Image (cartoon, rainbow, N blue to C red; front, side):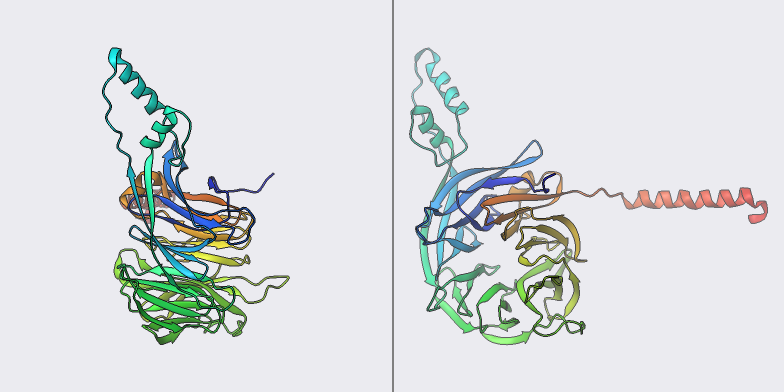
Length: 427
């Protein structure tokens, strides 16, 4: 019997490294490629529509934006602007999505015009990039959703002398700042949309793994391969995190940080959480577990740390509400955890069979409600195997409080009646 796999939403003709869902339009944006090597594998960004048909999720390719010899390794969305890490640069693109307006044509005699219009509507295709062929194909293109992607600028975000690579990019919540981290260990912060450099500093001795900024823009958290996870106020170090203070069995160089994400707390507007992932520095024949830590996002004290399996983690995502965490592993496994308790809610072992490169949750936006279906949470994953998979957790059944209290009351009455029948002098 084959291994259990999540439903395959889409398969690209190139390795996928990053995926995001645009909250305003509900579009899936995924990107990757073969890089500058002349292997014949293209570098591109794909725009997909997400639909729910008969309780099953499906995706339709709307547009392909080729990125020449540059593979997009990381990505962040700021409104209608995409910041993409491509080699040494952070490239910015603006996209627009609208339905094409069909030009009105004079009606033909004997109702021929109505028949033709019906034929063309029925022949509408799925791919907005399709072309060529006869009149029906041309009409298909006119009636399909239209995408326009234009380059709006680029900044050099990594100055490594050899193999420069932008490892992570992030927009601030208010879209006034753009942050990047590169293989040279530097964090660079630009004002957005002017792209004027605000400041830069060397955050780590080795390359950066991840970066995030607090919703109020007061703190930047960086993760490097030098075993450090640091909190910065502007370009000044505020505090270095230590997740294993109360775990004497873990030595200083036994683990390193891999990912970091700020998240809000559901129903608690003033609270903030930070989540970090720690992985073993060395891979043993009997691998030790990875860990995930929940921090107070204001004072940066650890609140809870729990092991999360022996598979090496490689990516972390947080839902908009801060309720769920998504984890991907180097062996292709995908998991969803409850953020409050760090308990595993969903897990598929080796769903991709190869490194999971990115995860994203369905946003808490009106466009996403229609495709969420009868699910508590929906998450997408992409991997080097060129697949985009969908992971959904159905709504868990719950009972109203009044019903629980009612049954508790019945149980109490039943126990009293039973005792009275067995022991007449009980009451």
